[in-house]
Length: 552
Image 1 (cartoon, rainbow, N blue to C red):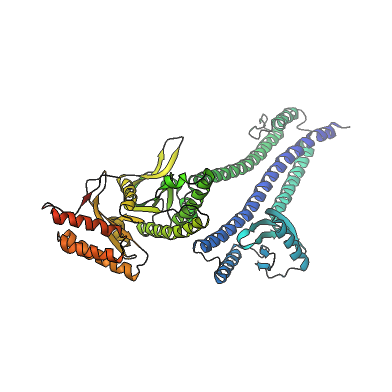
Image 2: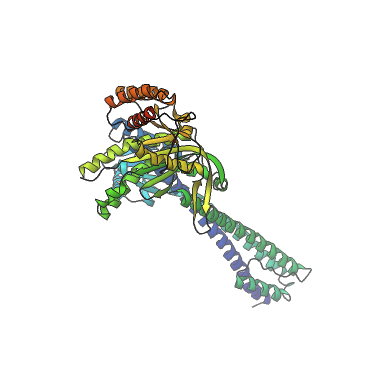
């Protein structure tokens, strides 16, 4: 065998194998990346559709409309309409099937055969979720599936298999073409210059073997000769450099994807247990700015269960935990539905705030809306308590609005997104006053100014709470007043006008009338006793009606 042939038989496999390893590794990595992106994209659509369906169901539940067929149909149509907006190509298809109703919606106009419907029903029966491959209308399809329990739907978001893998096939074809062209060029060059490069070829071959052995694309073949051998070495270096660039781009893409995923998980882990979903989405726009400590005006919200120690003594530990979990689940849903953030649980108490990290149109009003919603919900909660022969819960809620510090507070090992400041303490004091004045809700003057146009409000007192040196008007509110309540509240404010004018005899008449209408009105009883005391012992000249409270 001639030396020329021997060199070709030795060098050619090296060139082809190098191209094959580099080409197929790059192609395989690119195929995996594109396939993963495509799978994640279908998965993202499935998550978005399920999230939208969950939101529709939560809206029905929170508004107690799940027993209203017309609202159920509206929600179902809304989900089907939203599904159609997720379709981006003619070959993409979203189908939902119900065990009794059959196909609920289908974004494609192409009819399904009885065999197709049977296949979908089998998937519905097994409640198969995640990556799913099946044949519909004599076409293989791939996609993501999930089961939506509230409507008993099995939803399949799919794409034609050949379309889904089209880019992957194109990459493989292009890789083969490039490898074929490169191999042909290498063979031609080898045959032309073999005689010239016989002597120095050993060094080039040795360098190439080292690159293959160490699989290090950063290494280069040394250009030792200013001739064809040197040109071959230089050409090989360029090829390796380009392959290295392509491989680096793929690695960088994968690295950025991992960073983005970790960043999202980090933010969601911080907020997912106490922040509404729409707030989390807004936080992703600028998460760092959201978590920096800041001075901001917020509505601070405290609620507490009255006589909880007595209640807990009458329940077993299992009953207590179960009852508290049910109570917290109902109350927290109401707080979050109005855009609030649950800061913490303090025993049986709940602390929340409105206005951070996203400021609302009227955070004080949102807090009062949540409070009135909780007052309504506690009545339904207590109905079930009575049915189960368990003690009823009575809650007190205090709300304040003012300037506080909000942000991530704590140490490197444990941090909380929370609020601190004097206005937070005042909100806690107001919650404590609900028991003294026999009210379910008490809020500050700052809150009153922001809700008085929305709800009827009653001035409860002018007080200096413990730890404060200045007076504060405190109020309560209701959604609507009955005719008798409206009469009582009018008498109350008329009596207060005489009371703060130091005309305690006329004030007493109004408070007595209130107690005729409602003998259990705690506020009227308090002012009646005060009026009697001041009639007997008039207050000082500088008296302005402030009550200095010693207890919390």
